[in-house]
Image (cartoon, rainbow, N blue to C red; front, side, top):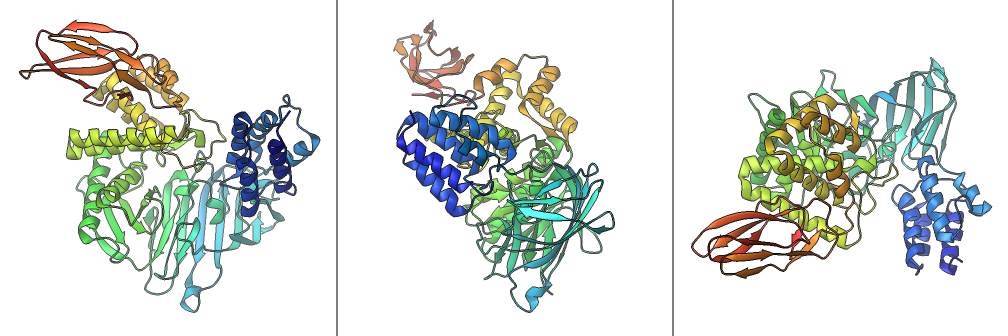
Length: 585
């Protein structure tokens, strides 16, 4: 029998979703409060799974119905398909996911009204070209709190539309182009999403990652849905516009390569000129600053380092895929940075080293995340893990091996902290994975370490060739882990699936206790696992002698190995080159 608190959660679930699939912020708080009162561990996990589906995007959509149903069955202790009729009725309120693929967004925004006052909303237009002719219902994301739709035109006429539960539903069968006139409301929360306004500085910018594109323009925020874009922004006199893509003579910006919708962005205001670094065989990198918010030395270091990184990635992986320019724009935000294609954002307020690293990380996304998209949010490591590893490799080439090892150590520390808080995430996660559920570092750090271990397994030269071939083959396409494993096995001739299967999902940092014994010239190596250690792990150890002698071995956790090294032993150094994601205590 379910507990009284589980029943209370059921009631809260029914009441918060009783009229539609989109929750208010207050409703989410009510549901979270009901989940917090559950004491039974199994019921608590089931309620947490349900809550995770709606906590951040505040929508229960069609893709989330089955995961919600399974979790609710566990919560209430009923067999599959045994939920009460009242719960099933609520699940039928799920919101449809976008049912079109977008080929191109032609977006226009007019902020010239700001010259007279500070209006609550601004005129905007989105001309959306579809991959295929629309069916009876064309569904796009549109946040009703932020977009006021005036008219939709298609096939040369005004066509019917409805706005409900965060979806714009258009009736224009056979149409390949939708012309949508609307007004967009900004938020004054500089840590918010959509169109962000800083009233004090007079600047505006956009930030829609991961699924908030509908707060800026009718769209599909799914990461696999790549589209080209044209962005035109009209501002008041004296203000600049920075956007993704190449600037044309009419002031519009064109992205002629497919990117996820959240990578389309723009910034307006009066920027401090942070200078331009022109690379002889690469990409011009220009920095647009926030006045005196960042010291000139830091600003110059960010710009020049990003320029070097773009050249490094271009030589290693393949040419920069978005033309001959990359803008770096400073913003005030809780995010360290954002991978807007051709116009990355870097958050101010970080230390110098973090600001520089953020700039390089966001630049690397032009190869992984923007240049090669992910199939769904459960594959986040294919974007963030690959990007982090590429960032680490740049700093290894730029600053040396000590820097590379320090970055790997920091990644391990962050991952250990997340896993200790039970924030786990499989490499091959579910399609319903919410990238903002805790915004964990797991895919970032676990992913970077996966590629480091793969580098050790294959050799640096083989992995470098593999990643370059992968980018060139999949450029402007959407991918997943299974595709990468298959590609890697064919390219290298190695059987890699067991490696990925063994490391797919960590619930705790692999940890062993060093119980080795040293007796003169003999070492009895013993590593006793204290948490699960993936199959196939062998940990390198360097033996240091009293007179400077050195010898290297590998030890399999759980198996004792006794070796006479031939010299008096002073100490053991475990995995000095950071080759295995494992703690030795």
